[in-house]
Image (cartoon, rainbow, N blue to C red; front, side):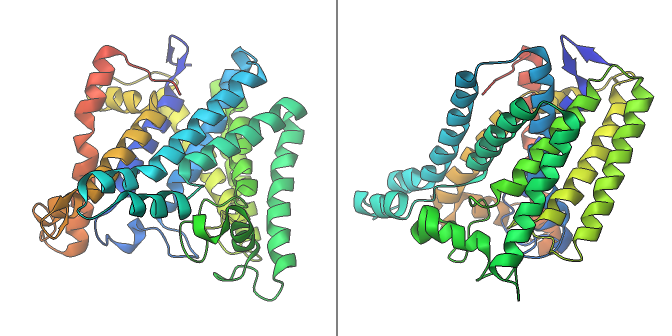
Length: 372
Protein backbone atom coordinates (compact mmCIF):
# COMPACT_ATOMS: atom_id res chain seq x y z
CA UNK A 1 0.00 0.00 0.00
CA UNK A 2 1.49 3.30 -1.09
CA UNK A 3 1.60 5.47 1.98
CA UNK A 4 3.69 8.00 3.83
CA UNK A 5 3.80 8.34 7.60
CA UNK A 6 0.66 6.28 7.91
CA UNK A 7 -1.26 8.11 5.16
CA UNK A 8 -3.20 6.11 2.60
CA UNK A 9 -2.87 7.86 -0.74
CA UNK A 10 -6.07 6.49 -2.30
CA UNK A 11 -8.13 7.89 0.57
CA UNK A 12 -6.32 11.24 0.58
CA UNK A 13 -6.81 11.57 -3.16
CA UNK A 14 -10.51 10.68 -2.94
CA UNK A 15 -10.94 13.30 -0.22
CA UNK A 16 -9.03 15.77 -2.38
CA UNK A 17 -11.35 15.17 -5.31
CA UNK A 18 -14.30 15.65 -2.96
CA UNK A 19 -12.97 19.02 -1.81
CA UNK A 20 -12.44 20.11 -5.42
CA UNK A 21 -16.03 19.14 -6.27
CA UNK A 22 -17.26 21.16 -3.28
CA UNK A 23 -15.45 24.23 -4.60
CA UNK A 24 -17.05 23.67 -8.00
CA UNK A 25 -20.63 22.74 -7.07
CA UNK A 26 -21.15 24.58 -3.79
CA UNK A 27 -22.47 27.95 -4.93
CA UNK A 28 -22.91 28.58 -8.65
CA UNK A 29 -23.82 32.28 -9.10
CA UNK A 30 -26.32 31.43 -11.85
CA UNK A 31 -27.67 28.46 -13.76
CA UNK A 32 -25.13 25.94 -15.07
CA UNK A 33 -25.89 23.03 -17.38
CA UNK A 34 -28.71 20.94 -15.82
CA UNK A 35 -26.45 17.92 -15.27
CA UNK A 36 -24.25 20.11 -13.04
CA UNK A 37 -27.08 21.59 -10.95
CA UNK A 38 -28.77 19.96 -7.97
CA UNK A 39 -32.11 18.44 -8.90
CA UNK A 40 -35.05 20.37 -7.49
CA UNK A 41 -36.56 17.24 -5.93
CA UNK A 42 -36.43 13.87 -7.68
CA UNK A 43 -33.55 12.64 -9.83
CA UNK A 44 -29.80 12.46 -10.11
CA UNK A 45 -27.23 14.92 -11.40
CA UNK A 46 -23.46 15.05 -10.96
CA UNK A 47 -23.93 17.51 -8.11
CA UNK A 48 -25.81 14.88 -6.07
CA UNK A 49 -22.68 12.79 -5.50
CA UNK A 50 -20.79 15.28 -3.30
CA UNK A 51 -22.34 15.22 0.17
CA UNK A 52 -22.85 11.42 0.36
CA UNK A 53 -19.24 10.97 -0.77
CA UNK A 54 -18.05 12.92 2.25
CA UNK A 55 -20.28 10.87 4.56
CA UNK A 56 -18.79 7.74 2.97
CA UNK A 57 -15.23 9.07 3.36
CA UNK A 58 -15.99 9.88 6.99
CA UNK A 59 -16.82 6.21 7.48
CA UNK A 60 -13.62 5.08 5.75
CA UNK A 61 -11.57 7.36 7.99
CA UNK A 62 -13.45 6.05 11.03
CA UNK A 63 -12.43 2.48 10.20
CA UNK A 64 -8.78 3.47 9.88
CA UNK A 65 -8.84 5.56 13.05
CA UNK A 66 -10.55 2.91 15.19
CA UNK A 67 -8.13 0.26 13.93
CA UNK A 68 -5.24 2.28 15.40
CA UNK A 69 -6.79 3.45 18.65
CA UNK A 70 -10.06 3.31 20.55
CA UNK A 71 -10.60 6.86 21.80
CA UNK A 72 -12.81 7.43 24.84
CA UNK A 73 -16.41 8.41 24.21
CA UNK A 74 -15.73 11.83 25.74
CA UNK A 75 -13.22 12.62 22.98
CA UNK A 76 -15.63 11.50 20.26
CA UNK A 77 -18.43 13.61 21.71
CA UNK A 78 -16.09 16.60 21.81
CA UNK A 79 -15.38 16.22 18.09
CA UNK A 80 -19.10 15.89 17.36
CA UNK A 81 -19.79 19.04 19.39
CA UNK A 82 -17.09 21.01 17.55
CA UNK A 83 -18.37 20.03 14.09
CA UNK A 84 -21.96 20.80 15.12
CA UNK A 85 -20.89 24.17 16.54
CA UNK A 86 -19.07 25.01 13.30
CA UNK A 87 -22.33 24.37 11.48
CA UNK A 88 -24.24 26.67 13.82
CA UNK A 89 -21.56 29.32 13.30
CA UNK A 90 -21.84 29.01 9.51
CA UNK A 91 -25.61 29.35 9.77
CA UNK A 92 -25.26 32.52 11.84
CA UNK A 93 -22.46 34.02 9.74
CA UNK A 94 -24.65 35.57 6.98
CA UNK A 95 -26.55 37.47 9.65
CA UNK A 96 -23.28 38.63 11.26
CA UNK A 97 -21.99 39.79 7.87
CA UNK A 98 -25.31 41.53 7.20
CA UNK A 99 -25.01 43.36 10.50
CA UNK A 100 -21.51 44.46 9.52
CA UNK A 101 -22.01 45.41 5.88
CA UNK A 102 -25.68 45.78 4.96
CA UNK A 103 -27.18 49.21 5.41
CA UNK A 104 -30.24 49.39 7.68
CA UNK A 105 -29.71 45.83 8.95
CA UNK A 106 -30.14 46.39 12.69
CA UNK A 107 -29.69 44.33 15.82
CA UNK A 108 -33.45 43.76 15.76
CA UNK A 109 -33.13 42.33 12.23
CA UNK A 110 -30.23 40.18 13.41
CA UNK A 111 -32.20 38.82 16.35
CA UNK A 112 -35.18 38.04 14.15
CA UNK A 113 -33.23 36.35 11.34
CA UNK A 114 -30.51 34.60 13.37
CA UNK A 115 -32.40 33.67 16.55
CA UNK A 116 -36.16 33.73 15.99
CA UNK A 117 -35.87 32.24 12.49
CA UNK A 118 -32.35 30.83 12.63
CA UNK A 119 -31.72 27.46 11.02
CA UNK A 120 -30.71 24.73 13.45
CA UNK A 121 -29.56 22.03 11.06
CA UNK A 122 -27.19 22.23 8.11
CA UNK A 123 -24.42 20.31 6.37
CA UNK A 124 -21.92 20.37 9.24
CA UNK A 125 -24.63 19.55 11.77
CA UNK A 126 -25.65 16.51 9.73
CA UNK A 127 -22.03 15.41 9.46
CA UNK A 128 -21.72 15.67 13.25
CA UNK A 129 -24.89 13.67 13.91
CA UNK A 130 -24.25 10.88 11.43
CA UNK A 131 -20.66 10.56 12.67
CA UNK A 132 -21.98 10.22 16.23
CA UNK A 133 -24.65 7.65 15.37
CA UNK A 134 -22.32 5.63 13.14
CA UNK A 135 -19.46 5.48 15.64
CA UNK A 136 -21.85 4.41 18.41
CA UNK A 137 -23.25 1.64 16.19
CA UNK A 138 -19.79 0.49 15.11
CA UNK A 139 -18.46 0.40 18.67
CA UNK A 140 -21.56 -1.41 19.84
CA UNK A 141 -21.93 -4.01 17.08
CA UNK A 142 -18.25 -4.69 16.22
CA UNK A 143 -19.13 -7.33 13.61
CA UNK A 144 -18.76 -6.27 9.97
CA UNK A 145 -21.60 -8.43 8.66
CA UNK A 146 -23.92 -7.15 11.36
CA UNK A 147 -22.84 -3.58 10.60
CA UNK A 148 -23.72 -4.19 6.93
CA UNK A 149 -27.07 -5.51 8.11
CA UNK A 150 -27.55 -2.51 10.41
CA UNK A 151 -27.07 -0.17 7.44
CA UNK A 152 -29.86 -1.94 5.57
CA UNK A 153 -32.09 -1.92 8.65
CA UNK A 154 -31.69 1.87 8.85
CA UNK A 155 -32.52 2.19 5.15
CA UNK A 156 -35.52 -0.12 5.43
CA UNK A 157 -36.79 1.80 8.46
CA UNK A 158 -36.39 5.12 6.66
CA UNK A 159 -38.13 3.83 3.53
CA UNK A 160 -40.99 2.09 5.32
CA UNK A 161 -41.81 5.14 7.41
CA UNK A 162 -42.39 7.25 4.30
CA UNK A 163 -44.91 4.70 3.01
CA UNK A 164 -46.62 4.26 6.36
CA UNK A 165 -46.95 8.00 6.96
CA UNK A 166 -48.33 8.82 3.50
CA UNK A 167 -49.20 5.60 1.64
CA UNK A 168 -50.83 7.33 -1.34
CA UNK A 169 -47.90 9.66 -2.11
CA UNK A 170 -45.00 8.98 0.28
CA UNK A 171 -42.58 11.52 -1.18
CA UNK A 172 -44.75 14.53 -1.93
CA UNK A 173 -42.87 17.78 -1.33
CA UNK A 174 -45.48 19.16 1.05
CA UNK A 175 -46.54 15.92 2.74
CA UNK A 176 -43.94 13.40 3.86
CA UNK A 177 -42.59 12.13 7.16
CA UNK A 178 -39.32 14.04 6.90
CA UNK A 179 -41.23 17.32 6.56
CA UNK A 180 -43.48 16.34 9.47
CA UNK A 181 -40.45 15.75 11.69
CA UNK A 182 -38.95 19.09 10.58
CA UNK A 183 -42.12 20.90 11.64
CA UNK A 184 -42.05 19.21 15.06
CA UNK A 185 -38.32 19.75 15.61
CA UNK A 186 -36.72 22.18 15.13
CA UNK A 187 -40.01 23.74 13.95
CA UNK A 188 -41.16 25.69 10.91
CA UNK A 189 -39.25 28.82 11.96
CA UNK A 190 -35.92 27.03 11.97
CA UNK A 191 -35.75 25.10 8.69
CA UNK A 192 -34.04 26.01 5.43
CA UNK A 193 -37.08 26.10 3.12
CA UNK A 194 -40.76 26.73 3.86
CA UNK A 195 -41.58 23.14 2.85
CA UNK A 196 -38.67 21.19 4.33
CA UNK A 197 -35.04 21.17 5.40
CA UNK A 198 -32.72 19.13 3.13
CA UNK A 199 -30.48 18.49 6.17
CA UNK A 200 -33.38 17.88 8.54
CA UNK A 201 -33.33 15.45 11.43
CA UNK A 202 -35.16 12.56 9.76
CA UNK A 203 -32.63 12.26 6.95
CA UNK A 204 -29.92 11.38 9.46
CA UNK A 205 -31.33 7.84 9.60
CA UNK A 206 -30.44 6.95 6.03
CA UNK A 207 -27.39 9.25 5.99
CA UNK A 208 -25.95 7.25 8.90
CA UNK A 209 -26.08 4.21 6.62
CA UNK A 210 -23.80 6.09 4.20
CA UNK A 211 -21.20 6.37 6.97
CA UNK A 212 -21.58 2.68 7.85
CA UNK A 213 -20.99 1.69 4.22
CA UNK A 214 -17.90 3.88 4.25
CA UNK A 215 -16.73 2.19 7.46
CA UNK A 216 -17.01 -1.22 5.78
CA UNK A 217 -15.10 0.10 2.75
CA UNK A 218 -12.42 1.29 5.16
CA UNK A 219 -12.18 -2.18 6.68
CA UNK A 220 -11.57 -3.59 3.18
CA UNK A 221 -9.03 -0.84 2.46
CA UNK A 222 -6.87 -1.70 5.49
CA UNK A 223 -7.32 -5.46 5.31
CA UNK A 224 -4.16 -7.57 5.00
CA UNK A 225 -5.37 -9.35 1.86
CA UNK A 226 -3.69 -8.86 -1.50
CA UNK A 227 -4.39 -5.39 -2.95
CA UNK A 228 -5.85 -6.82 -6.16
CA UNK A 229 -8.24 -9.00 -4.15
CA UNK A 230 -9.33 -6.02 -2.08
CA UNK A 231 -9.94 -3.97 -5.21
CA UNK A 232 -12.02 -6.77 -6.71
CA UNK A 233 -14.05 -7.15 -3.52
CA UNK A 234 -14.57 -3.38 -3.31
CA UNK A 235 -15.94 -3.31 -6.87
CA UNK A 236 -18.15 -6.35 -6.19
CA UNK A 237 -19.73 -4.69 -3.15
CA UNK A 238 -20.21 -1.50 -5.15
CA UNK A 239 -22.03 -3.35 -7.92
CA UNK A 240 -24.28 -5.12 -5.39
CA UNK A 241 -25.22 -1.77 -3.82
CA UNK A 242 -25.88 -0.21 -7.23
CA UNK A 243 -28.20 -3.09 -8.13
CA UNK A 244 -29.94 -2.81 -4.76
CA UNK A 245 -30.38 0.92 -5.27
CA UNK A 246 -31.78 0.39 -8.75
CA UNK A 247 -34.28 -2.18 -7.51
CA UNK A 248 -35.30 -0.02 -4.53
CA UNK A 249 -35.86 2.94 -6.84
CA UNK A 250 -38.92 1.12 -8.16
CA UNK A 251 -40.56 1.77 -4.79
CA UNK A 252 -38.88 4.99 -3.55
CA UNK A 253 -37.81 8.07 -5.45
CA UNK A 254 -34.16 9.06 -5.78
CA UNK A 255 -34.08 12.30 -3.82
CA UNK A 256 -31.13 14.14 -2.32
CA UNK A 257 -33.37 16.46 -0.30
CA UNK A 258 -34.78 13.48 1.61
CA UNK A 259 -31.64 11.29 1.39
CA UNK A 260 -33.88 8.41 0.34
CA UNK A 261 -32.85 4.77 0.41
CA UNK A 262 -32.11 4.36 -3.34
CA UNK A 263 -30.20 7.64 -3.27
CA UNK A 264 -28.08 6.26 -0.42
CA UNK A 265 -27.47 2.88 -2.04
CA UNK A 266 -26.58 4.23 -5.48
CA UNK A 267 -24.17 6.76 -3.99
CA UNK A 268 -22.56 4.13 -1.78
CA UNK A 269 -22.16 1.79 -4.75
CA UNK A 270 -20.50 4.52 -6.80
CA UNK A 271 -18.27 5.43 -3.85
CA UNK A 272 -17.08 1.84 -3.40
CA UNK A 273 -16.14 1.71 -7.06
CA UNK A 274 -14.43 5.13 -6.93
CA UNK A 275 -12.36 4.02 -3.96
CA UNK A 276 -11.42 0.80 -5.78
CA UNK A 277 -10.28 2.84 -8.80
CA UNK A 278 -8.23 5.13 -6.57
CA UNK A 279 -6.66 2.11 -4.86
CA UNK A 280 -5.63 0.82 -8.28
CA UNK A 281 -4.24 4.20 -9.35
CA UNK A 282 -2.48 5.29 -6.18
CA UNK A 283 -1.88 2.41 -3.75
CA UNK A 284 0.40 0.32 -5.97
CA UNK A 285 2.70 3.26 -6.61
CA UNK A 286 1.86 6.90 -6.08
CA UNK A 287 2.46 8.93 -9.28
CA UNK A 288 4.54 12.08 -9.30
CA UNK A 289 3.09 15.43 -10.30
CA UNK A 290 2.03 18.78 -8.86
CA UNK A 291 -1.68 18.14 -9.32
CA UNK A 292 -1.44 15.02 -7.16
CA UNK A 293 0.39 16.93 -4.42
CA UNK A 294 -2.28 19.64 -4.39
CA UNK A 295 -5.14 17.15 -4.23
CA UNK A 296 -3.35 15.39 -1.38
CA UNK A 297 -3.17 18.75 0.44
CA UNK A 298 -6.92 19.16 -0.06
CA UNK A 299 -7.51 15.57 1.04
CA UNK A 300 -5.57 15.92 4.29
CA UNK A 301 -7.66 18.93 5.32
CA UNK A 302 -11.16 18.32 3.94
CA UNK A 303 -13.18 19.88 6.76
CA UNK A 304 -10.93 22.95 6.86
CA UNK A 305 -11.25 23.63 3.13
CA UNK A 306 -14.98 22.87 3.22
CA UNK A 307 -15.42 25.35 6.08
CA UNK A 308 -13.10 28.01 4.61
CA UNK A 309 -14.85 27.92 1.24
CA UNK A 310 -18.24 28.29 2.93
CA UNK A 311 -17.06 31.31 4.94
CA UNK A 312 -15.63 33.12 1.91
CA UNK A 313 -18.65 32.41 -0.30
CA UNK A 314 -21.01 33.63 2.42
CA UNK A 315 -18.93 36.80 2.87
CA UNK A 316 -19.00 37.58 -0.85
CA UNK A 317 -22.74 36.84 -1.05
CA UNK A 318 -23.45 39.40 1.67
CA UNK A 319 -20.89 42.10 0.78
CA UNK A 320 -22.75 44.82 -1.18
CA UNK A 321 -21.31 46.02 -4.49
CA UNK A 322 -23.56 48.56 -6.18
CA UNK A 323 -27.03 47.05 -6.50
CA UNK A 324 -25.79 43.46 -6.16
CA UNK A 325 -23.31 41.51 -4.04
CA UNK A 326 -19.60 40.83 -4.53
CA UNK A 327 -20.07 37.22 -5.64
CA UNK A 328 -22.57 38.05 -8.39
CA UNK A 329 -20.52 41.12 -9.33
CA UNK A 330 -17.43 38.94 -9.85
CA UNK A 331 -19.43 36.60 -12.05
CA UNK A 332 -21.01 39.39 -14.09
CA UNK A 333 -17.64 41.10 -14.69
CA UNK A 334 -15.65 37.98 -15.55
CA UNK A 335 -17.26 34.99 -17.25
CA UNK A 336 -21.02 35.60 -17.32
CA UNK A 337 -21.16 36.64 -21.00
CA UNK A 338 -18.71 34.09 -22.41
CA UNK A 339 -20.39 31.93 -25.09
CA UNK A 340 -23.62 31.31 -23.11
CA UNK A 341 -24.96 31.91 -19.59
CA UNK A 342 -24.54 28.23 -18.69
CA UNK A 343 -21.02 28.09 -20.06
CA UNK A 344 -20.06 31.32 -18.33
CA UNK A 345 -21.30 30.09 -14.95
CA UNK A 346 -19.59 26.73 -15.37
CA UNK A 347 -16.34 28.47 -16.26
CA UNK A 348 -16.69 30.75 -13.22
CA UNK A 349 -17.09 27.73 -10.92
CA UNK A 350 -14.07 26.07 -12.52
CA UNK A 351 -11.95 29.19 -12.03
CA UNK A 352 -13.18 29.47 -8.44
CA UNK A 353 -11.92 25.93 -7.86
CA UNK A 354 -8.55 26.71 -9.45
CA UNK A 355 -8.13 29.77 -7.22
CA UNK A 356 -7.90 27.43 -4.23
CA UNK A 357 -4.89 25.58 -5.60
CA UNK A 358 -2.33 28.19 -4.43
CA UNK A 359 -3.73 27.73 -0.92
CA UNK A 360 -3.28 23.98 -1.33
CA UNK A 361 0.30 24.62 -2.47
CA UNK A 362 1.02 26.48 0.78
CA UNK A 363 -0.47 23.63 2.78
CA UNK A 364 1.62 21.14 0.80
CA UNK A 365 4.88 23.03 1.22
CA UNK A 366 4.34 23.48 4.97
CA UNK A 367 2.93 19.95 5.33
CA UNK A 368 -0.06 21.41 7.20
CA UNK A 369 -2.78 19.13 8.54
CA UNK A 370 -5.58 20.86 10.42
CA UNK A 371 -7.55 18.37 12.48
CA UNK A 372 -11.07 19.01 13.71
